[in-house]
Image (tube, rainbow, N blue to C red):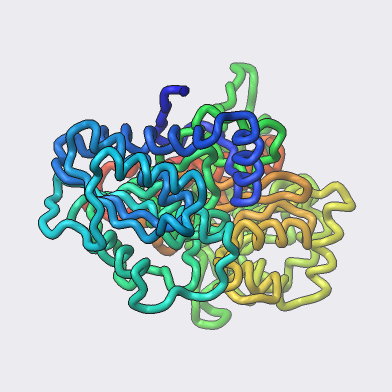
Length: 508
């Protein structure tokens, strides 16, 4: 049997992600060529080894096992931990009469070895001990469970104990109730408390990495993600998504000049005089971010006749009236702080700009105007490149849906946007999605809650504009900008100070 090779998943490498159906096909194909029970034995050994590494001083390990094969993985892990001298207590929701064959065999092995079984978790687990969640894994989706679990059921009772435990929790494959394809909890499984009270959370994804661990609520739920492929290759199975990786820094030739790196124009920033709500700062943030991300020149066309003609903090920015912009020669970032005023220029922008990033109020204006939607859809046919950067509510407006519906399946929503408008779509949020027509979507692994601050989305739009202006393929430009944007937040040196958009814009 292959030795488990558990890896910690950290930002840096592109990795294929496989949804539930694809994972099941990979598992079935692998099992057909292996002796019975092999994959479960490998899984249990992988769980046990990681458990020992995560909690080397643990004296008691409690394993909550469900009635299916995820529970079988936990039972197999119990056997190995018991053999290594730990006190192992298993709460098993299955029965010998109904257990799947592999899980039944693991139950027999654990029972014969003397593993302790108890319906209740141990009473005095300390912070140095460990809990293992082997209740459902992806079994929830494989069984097509649609209804919420019964309140007070044994399953929810054990899950509540896991979430309330002071000890670290290791989830086997997927935290219980989290949908592996979407990163959202199935009905009736969402935690009642937020943030999670458990001080330390880990997830060991087995056989494949699942998309839901990296987007939606998945990142909070999964904690640190580990992976063991159990010695199985996915073969010809097409990934459901890719975990994005950073783009290599392009070399800059000595003989280059500012024109070598493209001109970015930022169109936005409705003035205070229009409706009493000045938003010029959003456009300036996007422009500064484009400059610090390597654009050769950055032009700023504020939608405000009374706006400044100079950015005192960034004098390199060049201010222009919108009518003075050579739109057909530029990469344009349109919409940041555009308010209602952006509606007056969108038709020209959509018709003339060869490389376009649409953000914020530009997206809202398009969502409210069928003519602008038609113009946006026609850009791809003209060979013009467009990147949309909506947050969930903006995406919902474009799709004629709701933010909750978008969040329920972020991958599907991002792909729907890309397909409907023939463009690259960046659905922002925890685990931002980059989707394009006919391509496998990317999920971004960088970023954190420091980005939950006004203006950080404008910064992303400017960064993306700079990547696009440099001649990078639109999908690659979006992946690179989103990754760098999140990475800058991850590297923020002062954990006690908030990350402002102004500081983020300087990170490039």
